[in-house]
Length: 322
Figure 1: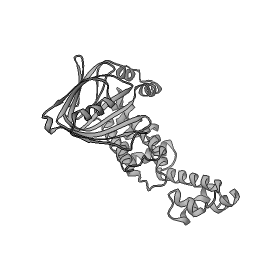
Figure 2: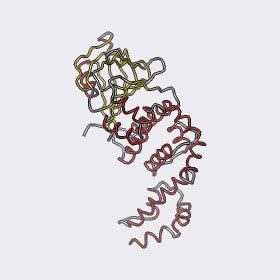
Figure 3: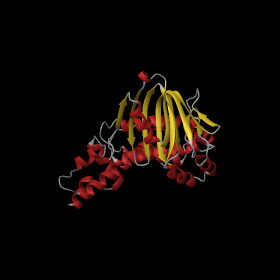
Figure 4: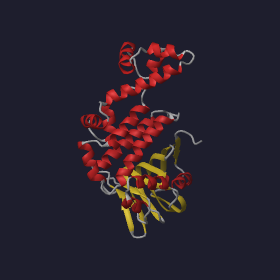
């Protein structure tokens, strides 16, 4: 198992080359751009189940040529720029800081100093997910011989960048310990759904619609985030910001698609989890422990809401399990 996170800070271009070889297979040419004495690469890498996320900063720059591998490689600059070229076809970040996606053909990459993300996700997994959404045009694009540009200045692009920063922050906050699998899976789903929408040719128009009325996909992502953070304080505004919409619009989406407010949904999730813990009735289990483990700090409020949902006291559930 790879370390969490995998940290690299080097002034040695050969060490940096080995890092880049882990992102691109078949690298057969690599040159440092700028003064060799100024070269420095600092990056962190976190390997999830479906994504590999890399965030780093490279002083000076590099040029390389490579072949496509099993992963779809996407570079998203936060500062600086990057260009990918396959034959005469070029995709570059430009002044807007667009993302660039590697093609399924021999290509080259050039950057003159950049800080940002590199995302690697299984190419076959991306194609299967796009097939679920019947996005044949997007499938043709990711299977094509030309590098792709991703407009990160559009509503969909800005929402994806916000989600990317949120996911990285959540994962990085765990320190040197990999977060729980449930949290990782939920965050990956948020990232993957946003990436699929970003690849879609009509993603911009969809993004405008979701701001007015968050669709099932956004509400589902919000639900997954809540389930993954069930023991923590969760604010509706924080989740809405992650998804690129306002708290008011998220509330509207929940009322339309779930039939309750986000906070009511979260409370029900916590109550359901508490009931499962009480029904197990393991050694040392108590009503207080179950309430605290499920995010309830007020025991009186917990007991009242528990009775309203299950028509019995939590102590009765625990007693029956013993």
